[in-house]
Structure formats: C-alpha cells, structure tokens
Length: 252
View 1 (cartoon, one colour):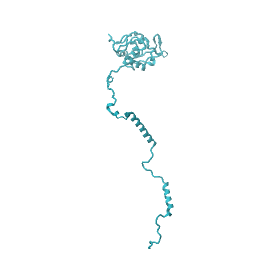
View 2 (tube, rainbow, N blue to C red):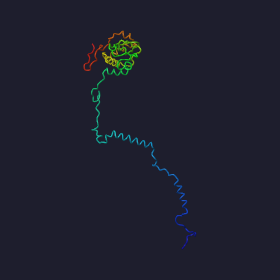
View 3 (cartoon, rainbow, N blue to C red):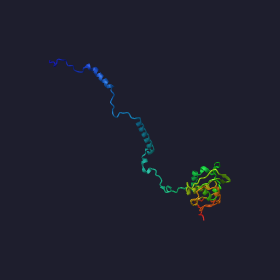
View 4 (cartoon, helix red, strand yellow):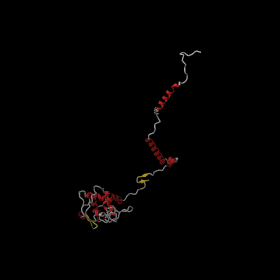
C-alpha cells in the first residue's frame, strides 16, 4: 500500500489535546453579559399607573352612560325628552314673580340687616334704632325716603328712646330708585308695620328734589317735615298693600 507523502501519520477526528482550550473559551463567553434585545425592556411603574387609571375611569364612564349595555338605550324613540322652554319658563307656563316686598326683603338682608337686625328691632347698645313700630317707618313716605336717600347723622329719638351713637350712611349712590322703593315697601309692611307701598317714581322724584342737598339729614330736618307727608304719586299712610287680583285704584 502507498503511504501518504510526508511519511507522517494523519490523525482523524477531534484532537482531544485541545479540550482545555475549548473550556476556557466557553467560560469566557458565559461571563459576557447578554446583548439587550428590543421589545423586552421592563415597563415603567408610572406607565402601569397611567394604564390602570385609564382602565378605571373608562369602566366608570361606561358603567354610568352605557344604559346597562342595553340595545334599547340607543333607540332615539326611547330617549327622555326635555320640555320645551317658553319665554316664561319650562313649557311656556307663567312663572311666579317676586312681589315688591319679597324683592325688598332680599335688599334689606344684604344691606340693612347688619345694623337694624333681621327682626327689625335694631341694636340699642350700638345706637341703631328699631324699624318695627318706628314712627318714621309707619308715617308718610317723605321722611323715610329722605333718610334712606341722604342718610341720617346725629341723635334721633324713635319710640321715645334716643339713639345717637350710630350714623346711617346715604344710599343714593349705592341703590337704584327701584331697589330703594322695594326695601321701603318691605320695611313698611313687615314686623307689624302698617305703611303703604312706595313706588319707583316716588323715589325718582325725591332724588331729583334732593340733588342739591349734599349732606345727611338731622333729626331737626326730619321734624320740620310733617309726620304724614307723602311723596307725590303714592298711597296714603296706613293703606294696605295692593292685591294682585284686586289692584288698588290709581290715586286721584
């Protein structure tokens, strides 16, 4: 048989003398960290919280507005209809309006009740006279209109008791003619008072008359006016408030 050239023996298969080198290479590879792979990063805790809130509120919204997941809830013929709103209220029916005294009560509560108290008894210790049973309130409309428009300064005697430590501010710059008429109508018909209503036209006329009077009135100024003096266009003192069904006849 012919031997291969070179005369050496050829070893076939793995050279088992290289086993130790292979183990070293494998150990080095295992010590290396694995390369990161896209798509396998861990989710952020904030992102998980956002997803959880979105699922929670989405479920709450569906539970409230889904109509119990019934097919009839989407039927336009079964949806509740809102009543048509007319010029005076739902369905066009007439809505009740506040009376002049009711409007005046709101104005009194917002501007006058702090001093004169909600019960109209005033605060004697602080110098605020009562409105309940007051001769200025139950008398004619002129004196009480003068007080509210231009204010009051100095001592004043009401129901036999003198009040002199408090000063009433003028309201001509703060309240309109209509609001002054409303609040005067309220105090003249509340707490057992028997005064008649006051109109906006009466206050407007008095405002023009007192336009050149810059200062507040004193008790002597009020005493110079007759107790039953009325503003033009109103009802006399002691007149009952007009009934909505049976309005009072116009003044002669």
